[in-house]
Amino acid sequence: MNDCIFCKISKGEIPSKKVYEDDKVFVFHDISPEAPVHVLVIPKEHIASANDIDESKSDIIAHIYLVIHKIVRELGIAETGYRIVNNCGEDGGQTVNHLHFHILGGRSLKWPPG
Ligand code: AMP
Ligand code: ZN
Image 1 (cartoon, rainbow, N blue to C red):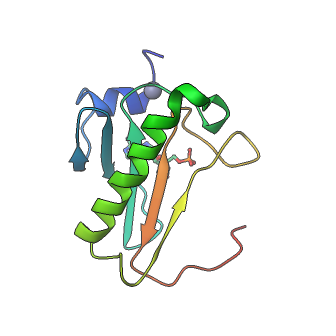
Image 2 (spheres, rainbow, N blue to C red; image 1 turned 60 degrees about the vertical axis):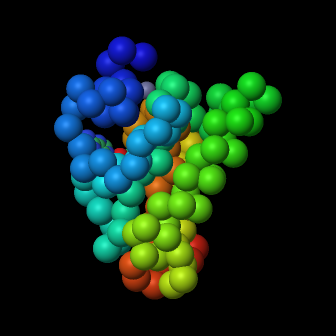
Image 3 (tube, helix red, strand yellow; image 1 turned 90 degrees about the vertical axis):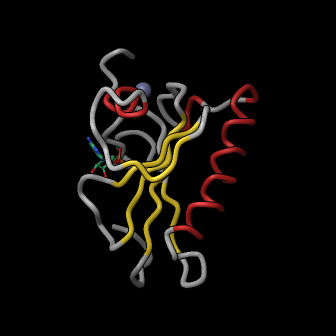
């Protein structure tokens, strides 16, 4: 857990382009953006993936969606639309084992993803 890059980012131990922060959540720009707007929303608490969400995590997951509701307005993509992506596990394309929600917007997104 101490080697987790997203834990280090949320603590400010690794630099990032911060968008938003509160006591439970940290939001920052993805280092390799796939759209004009591409930010990552993470809980400060280390949760490895969606597989680790249980009843005890329901408050933080609800809070994450409230933060998303706020930041998409600040980022100017609420009206045009955006995509919330949570990759889980190897086949899901998860490369960082700390729960994160991609917010992608600023262009028309294709469906389905590859
Ligand atoms: P995933 O493939 O769903 O696990 O997404 C991980 C995301 O983290 C990728 O889009 C990476 O570009 C992004 N990422 C990895 N390292 C950093 C970093 N140091 N700062 C910002 N984004 C990062
Ligand atoms: Zn972590």
